[in-house]
Amino acid sequence: MIGFSFVFVFLMWTGVGGFRFDNLTHYVNSHEEEFVETLRTWVAVESDSSDIGKRSDLHRMMDLTAEKLRVIGGSVAMVDVGVQALANGSTIDLPKVVTAQFGSDPDKHTICIYGHVDVQPAKKEDGWETDPYQLTDINGNLYGRGASDNKAPVLAWIHTVEVYRALNIELPVNVKFLIEGMEETGSDGLDALIVAQRDTFFSDVDYIIISDCGWLSRRPAVTYGTRGNCYFFAEVSGPKKDLHSGVYGGTVVEPMTDLIGIMDKLISPSGEILIPGIREAVAALSDEEWKIYQDIDFDVERYKEDIGISELMYNNKVDLLAHRWRHPTVSIHGIEGAFSAPGTKTVIPAKVTGKFSIRQVPNMDPGVVERQVTDYLNAAFSKRKSPNKLNVTMVIGAKPWLADVNIPLYEAGRAAVRRVFDVEPDMIREGGTIPIAKTFEDVTGKSIIMLPIGGFDDGLHSQNEKISRYNYIEGTKLFISFLHEVSQIKKR
Ligand SMILES: *[C@@H]1O[C@H](CO)[C@@H](O)[C@H](O)[C@H]1NC(C)=O
Ligand SMILES: *[C@@H]1O[C@H](CO)[C@@H](O)[C@H](O)[C@H]1NC(C)=O
Ligand SMILES: *[C@@H]1O[C@H](CO)[C@@H](O)[C@H](O)[C@H]1NC(C)=O
Ligand SMILES: [Zn+2]
Image 1 (cartoon, rainbow, N blue to C red):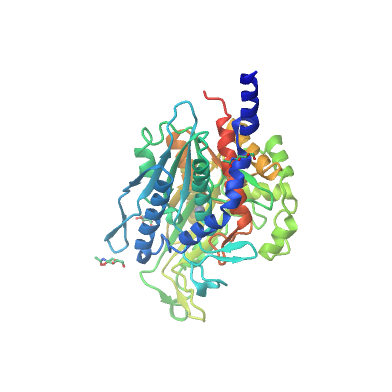
Image 2 (image 1 turned 90 degrees about the horizontal axis):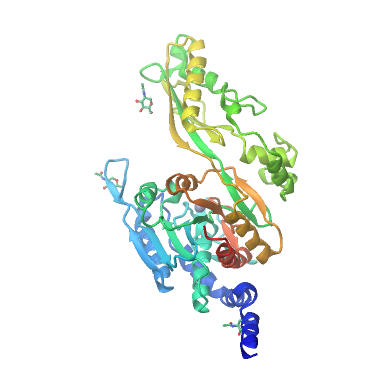
């Protein structure tokens, strides 16, 4: 009898399955101001990775991150990833990568949280309404550079561990962190670190979690794919120097005319990619996928309003989302070497370089795309019988990433959303590229999930970036809940 009531009381106290969710969320609620203050301290550090003049701030940001993880009991390492080569031939130190570990119980799953604490550039003069490095609360929105991308999500993860520890509740999974400081400029040094630590740091990791993106609407989302990107330079060169169009015009075949002629052959006015073989490589839309898009909360009219246009290429939700996420596209970004100042200078540029990129989706292969594009443009150019020279090069070849949403990891993500927000998440993809996801997958072979907590209107990379208190605090609860859901996955 004593045994029975003891078990009964124990179950009452711990809640179903031993998950003391109410205790944990209560702690989060009562520490909201403290969590906001920590974010304020972090946002105040101008950890702009693109500005080498701010490198000492960036180093300080990595120190702060390591310190925070140490204070809550992690075994922390700051990994040297070498130097960054500058244009003038000299080098500067890359920010160290911070790794941390909480727990190493072999009976538990191990997750690894990836995040970054560097930020995009920001100046008040760029059009910010507040000082970008002073976190400012306006109606529950916390404005500041890096607030949503990616400092608050990283802190929400750290607070998740902190809350379990503060309440003396055992972490349901082992948690590792991998936090870098060069994400906004291409994660210099990180690929090599992942390869080097594949059989050490990553050997016991079961799942990799990335929270470096946002929801699509007010409904929470789980992200299962990103597009890749192949970026091209097409250089057309002719005369050995720029020429005056009045003096020489009409006697030379102009590189700019050639370039525009071939660039116009990349994509039709209705958005059809004209390079042979590209559309054929795209995976067919399955019924399951169609259903996912159909269920997503997405307002086409508001999307149009946001961009400020009256007509889109596709007017129904499914086609629109499909073309944002799961179809390739060609974007022309600019022409280098062209006269671009205002006014009417009459120059014939001697050499011009067209820049364009093609977003990658399954089952495209960047190596194949490189050949298809090069062959196609060379053929189009030779039809012009121009005496100029064309040189096509692919300078970035990032693969797309796509996860299977039917694995238990994704059910854990959906269950965590249901518990905290009482809704089914939107299952979404990103039209942009997060190359590190593909690297993690290719090098470590582990499953990856993206669990965003940023709002759809957070203005990442833009003026007036913010995260709402709601997303920050409820997002922390989402992560707390997610740890529990992952612990419920059967160990293989
Ligand atoms: C946990 O929650 C239970 C029930 O709400 C409460 O009685 C208990 O005091 C809480 N424990 C802690 C450590 O907050
Ligand atoms: C290269 O540029 C950096 C940053 O502008 C500067 O600090 C450094 O002195 C330069 N090095 C050389 C060799 O000019
Ligand atoms: C073509 O351009 C690339 C990149 O700009 C350059 O490295 C390469 O030498 C060029 N090739 C020729 C034949 O000019
Ligand atoms: Zn980011």
